[in-house]
Image (cartoon, rainbow over all chains, first blue to last red):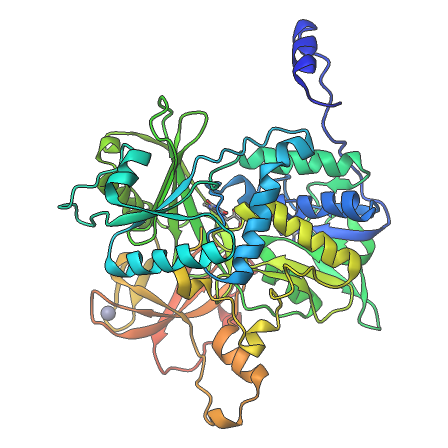
Length: 416
Length: 100
Ligand SMILES: Cc1cc2nc3c(=O)[nH]c(=O)nc-3n(C[C@H](O)[C@H](O)[C@H](O)COP(=O)(O)OP(=O)(O)OC[C@H]3O[C@@H](n4cnc5c(N)ncnc54)[C@H](O)[C@@H]3O)c2cc1C
Ligand SMILES: [Zn+2]
C-alpha cells in the first residue's frame, strides 16, 4: 500500500481498519544469496539498496531482537556532514544528499528536518579548529559557516552568551543543511522498502556464529533458529561486532562502550535547531513531540550492559544548564543507553574482510545514525560487486596496519 | 556507577574516585625495531573487547593515586577482583561462573 494524503483520508473515513502490516514476519529459508546480520538502520538500508540498485533480492536480514531496537532506536538523531577529512566529507555528505530525498524515495515520512546544527566554540582551540573545519568543508563543497556569539544567539535564542559564563561562547560553526530525523521511521521505511522487493526480515533470531567451509569461504550462519546458508554474509551489528566477527576468526580494532541519552517532559516549541558543544560535552535538540533530546558522553570502560553511569548524565545536564539557564527547572522523563563500537580513529570500517564472502560495516561509534543512507548505499555496492565503492574504499580494516588513519578523533575529539 | 576496591587502600569506593586506563597486561615490545606492521597494529590499536571477563587497569586518581588491575564482567559491570600492578595475570577460570 502506498502512503498518501488520499489514503489517510480514505482510511480515516473507513475507521482506520484497512491498514495492513507494512512487512510480513518472514520465516528463515534454508539458504540465501546474502545474509545480513543486524536489522539496525545500516543493515536494513543495505538490504534495501541491494534489492533496489543491484537487483539482489534473495536476501535475509537476521536480527537478534526487534528491528531498529539497537542504537538506531536509541540515538539522538543528529545529522551533519561537516567533518574535517576529505574521506569523511565525501562519506557523510553522500548520506546527507540521500537524506534530502529519502521520504520521497521510500514513500515513508522519515521527518528529516534541516533545522541546522550549531557547534559551539568555548576556547581558542575550538575557535581555530572549527574555522579550519569550515575552510576544509568549503573545499569539499560542504556548507559550514562561522557565527559570532550574537549571530549564534540569533539562530538559537535560548543560548546563554554571557561572557561571564563558566565556559563562554566565543562563536559557533553552523551547518544549515544539518538537522535531525525520526530514528524509528528510518528503520521502518527501509524495512518496508526492502520487504516490498522480496527481502526477508527475520526478527528474534540471534546469529550465534559464522560458518566457514573447508576452503575458508563463507557457508552461512548458525542462528538461534537453526542454520541458514549464504554465499555472502554481511555483519552490521554495531556494539556486538567483535563478538560476532571473532566466530569467523576476524579480529577488529573495536571497543564497545556504553553511550547514554535522555529526554525531558514535552513542552511547546522552544528550541529551533541542534546545538552541540564538544568542550562541555553536551548536545541538544527538541523533538516534534516537544521533548528536549539530550545526548551524553561514553563511559570510559568497555561494557555490553547498555546502561552507563549516572554521573555521566549528571555532567551533561550541568553543561546544558550552563548553556541554557531557561531549562534549569525542566524535568527529565527517561534516560537510556546503547552500546557503541568505537575505532581508534573514530571512523567506521566498511568493506571486505580477510574471509572470502564475509563483509563488515561497523565502528560507527557515537555518530553513525547520520550516515545510515550513505552507509547502506555504499555497503550494498561493496557486497554486490565484491569490491568497495569509491566512497568507502579508504575505510578498510587494513588502514590500521598501513597507518593511513582517517583521524576524526584527533580532528574533533567527539564525533556525533 | 561501578564499585571498585582499591587493593592498596583496601577500600570499596565509587567509580568517581578512579579513572580507567584500558586493558591490563599489554606489554611494550621489548625490541620495537624488530616489529613488523602487523605487530605494530596489534600493539597500538587492537585490544580485547570481550563480552564477559575483562582484565583492565584503573588508577585511584582521587585517593592513593596508584595504578592497579581489575577483573570486571563486561556483561554485568560487576568488578569481581582487584590486584596490585605487577602481579601476574589471574586465572580467569576461577572467576567464570558460567554467566553471560
Ligand atoms: C545514546 C546514543 C546517541 C547517539 N547519537 C547519535 C547522533 O546524534 N547522531 C548520529 O549520527 N549517531 C548517533 N549515535 C550512533 C548511532 O546510533 C549508531 O552509529 C547507528 O545507529 C548504528 O546503526 P547500526 O544499524 O549500525 O546499529 P544498530 O542500530 O545498533 O543495529 C545493530 C543490530 O544488530 C543486532 N545484533 C547484534 N548482535 C546480533 C547477533 N548476534 N545476531 C543478530 N543480530 C544482532 C542488534 O540487536 C541491533 O538491532 C548515538 C548512539 C547512542 C547509543
Ligand atoms: Zn587507593
